[in-house]
Length: 230
Ligand SMILES: CC(C)(COP(=O)(O)OP(=O)(O)OC[C@H]1O[C@@H](n2cnc3c(N)ncnc32)[C@H](O)[C@@H]1OP(=O)(O)O)[C@@H](O)C(=O)NCCC(=O)NCCS
Image (cartoon, rainbow, N blue to C red; front, side, top):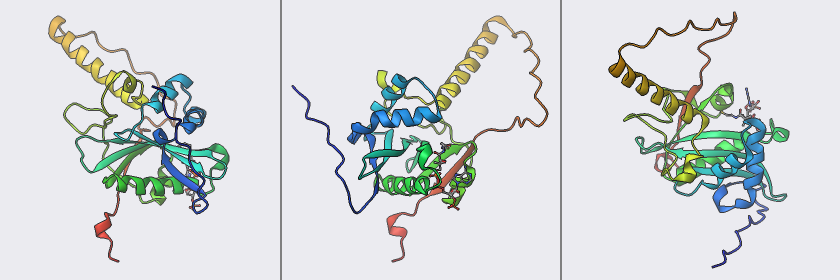
């Protein structure tokens, strides 16, 4: 049966910029893939696969659109954290390089928080390497790390793992999985064959290199509608 044509985003004179779920407006998928690849280069096809597997069931890709010109100005992705009922994890927050410093990043985050509340979630987690001040201004505070993936602890889900969603695992998530698998393999080997050979010496770090330069995890608790005093 032929598919109905995808819904196009209608112009909204009241709101020059709107944040909409990408899967509802696939017309912006290519623009989002290109935007993300400008900042975090990856194969365009992998990007498109990843974006096309977003859905209402999370992860949700949210695109910031200038409604008149129908231009994609920003993007972010929201995933659920299965063991944290009330919370979500936001990643891939990006504003088009030509539009940075115009308040769009803040607008994107504000609209994102409204969306998160509308989905009955009230805590936003994220991790960043270098944009701490940006998030701090928006009310995010440093917090304990939440794992994108873990055994039995908090984990960030990218929804059900079908063949499509495999492509969607973030780079960080993949690294963590690989690391864990390597650890388990190592332990198994130890059990079977005795202790492994000593590890090679660590590479020398250049002076001033901060070996602790890891991502900062940040968190914001959003006010619930019933918390409002007026
Ligand atoms: C981070 C990003 C989304 C911010 O978007 P933006 O549209 O430039 O942000 P805004 O214009 O809303 O800036 C809001 C405020 O944060 C400040 N700010 C923005 N980026 C900042 C940074 N890296 N360091 C310090 N302050 C920053 C702005 O000066 C502004 O301050 P003001 O309110 O006092 O004027 C954008 O720079 C971007 O896409 N960066 C590349 C991708 C990226 O690193 N994403 C974050 C992944 S964790």
